[in-house]
Image (cartoon, rainbow, N blue to C red; front, side):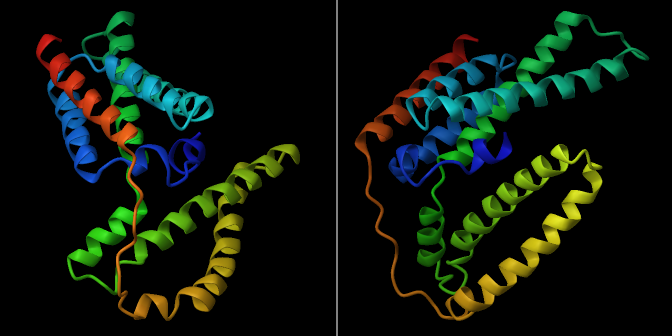
Length: 223
C-alpha cells in the first residue's frame, strides 16, 4: 500500500500542475485539516482526485492505507478510553474517519510534489551541490520499498518469520546502492549543477487543483 500510494506515480498528472497552484492547494488542505472538526470529506475528495489521476489502483491503495491507519489509531484511542471516559462506537468511528482524512491529505500532498521542482528550488537557492539529492532519494526509496515488498512476499511463501527480512533487505540494498552511488553519483553530488530542469506544465491539472482549493475554502466555512 505504501509503495503504490507514494511512489507508483510518474512525473506526470498533478506533478505537472503549476507550482503556485500546488502551494495554495496544500495550504488550503492543511488549514482545512487543522481547523475543521470533520475531516472525512477530505478522504472523499482525495479519492475523487486520485481517480482522475493516477487512477483506480492509486485511489484504492490510498483508501486502504488511510482507513487502515484510521482504524488502528481509533482502536488504540478506544482501548485507552475504556479505562477513562469510555468512548462510544460512534466516537471511535469519528476518530477513525478523521485520521483517515488527514492521512489521505498527507499522501496526496506528497504525491503532487515533483522531485524536479525540489531540485529547481534548491538550485535557485544556490544549493547547487545539494540539488541532485532529492532526485537520488526519489530513486533509492521506492527501490528499497519494492525490494522489501518482494522479500516479504517470498518470506510469506516460505512461512518465515518476518523479523528476518528487514535486515536482509537493508544489507542487500546497501551493497547494491553503494555500487550505484559510487559508480553514477559520486562526481555528480560533488559537482555544482549548471541548469534547472525544464518542466512541462499542465493547465488541466492546474485548474483542477485551483478549483479544489476553492471548494476546500468553501467547505471550511460551512462544516
